[in-house]
Length: 574
Image (cartoon, rainbow, N blue to C red; front, side):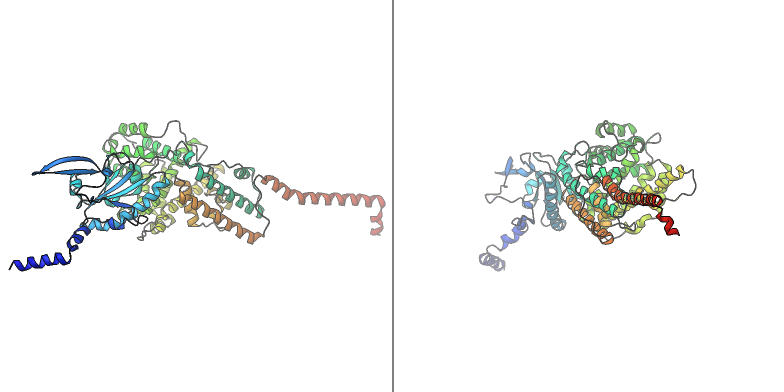
């Protein structure tokens, strides 16, 4: 009876000789079938060499005995310091359901992260190792769960291991040592900066023409801001390095002055907020910013930092900003440098959360924007000691001002919703600016219920109508998309392809604004050529009618004198 099944099996093998091998081969790899479409799938599956059982790209070998036979355990070059490139390596098992689901996330991640890395001048390769096909390699590497993700810097066998559902390109670039010094040198972004600066000049010249059509005087200061724009400067005159410096300085100041306000270790509530705040900054802030040196040190020594102030100060002394730096990007008054730089840090954070979420591989790695807003409120509650400012912010927050509860609590996670976070903070910042402007006017007038004029309210808002004419509508409302693009241009430290595109789109929107003014006021000619003094234009515009009026008055007087001499007016009176 046992003979018949065996006979059937042998016949099946003879008729379908490759059937069993193909089935087994399909179970060995998840990525091999996509290797020919490298534009779609940059992930390289490590394959077994057709000669014997040795692995391709072999380097180091280790002989072990198995009975009478010797087998060679070969370490792939991608796991050694002989590999010249940065690489991300996934260890997986093709039978694992999570590995099967993660496959497409990993392919998308590899494609997007490879493109992003090239933007920053870095090459990254993406590999996958099947632990079914390469059991001994995975055993040697102590892989005991699937999938496992490791990040190997170029020419290094040392790695950083991350959870597969938390993998992110920002994390990988940081592990590979990406650090661009925006705090002290703008030279690395001069090319993109020049492009944006040229757009800046065009926008400002467009708006100056618009103001002239409305009959408004353009001040010498405004005129000089167009004709004397320094290359590498942004729309309001601040460089990327100044914004980054001010934010880093305010972070340093807060760590030194605002964390430990009482003797002893941090209280439980304060400790919880501090740990979560550091974790959020470490996760979301631009991966190439030098502030990460301090954040990494704080996070890795968190138990000491939350119990001993000296441990925190020691980290900031070592990894904080240069002591030669001062707040100089957002104010000429150093007494306001801390609060101004703190706002800059908040804006960089909210824009960075959008960038993080856009690049997220899985939904589990997305940072909920409502969670960020809540933590920001908690941080201000625990660590911002200016009582009046703190009370105002928390009162607005609890009252869901700027429609926060609806805008940030939307369950539809999308880029459109994520952008509401920096837009909400921008609206809150403008609300604070208007309140401070009103309080200053009250002090100047000796108290009382003071109201700002329309022009005073506009002066308190940013960006100004002069700096970004396309941001604002004539009724005081704004364009969310243009405002977000403006915020990213300002607060995302790298002038990447997206920022260059945003600069062009803002310029195009400014030209549309120009067209609307042309429709309202008539076409008064092309934009003035660069170098023309706007003050002189204004004097000519006003001077010609004035000269004509003076000429008319003089002529009238001369005629009256002539009549007096001839007496003709007396004859007319008769």
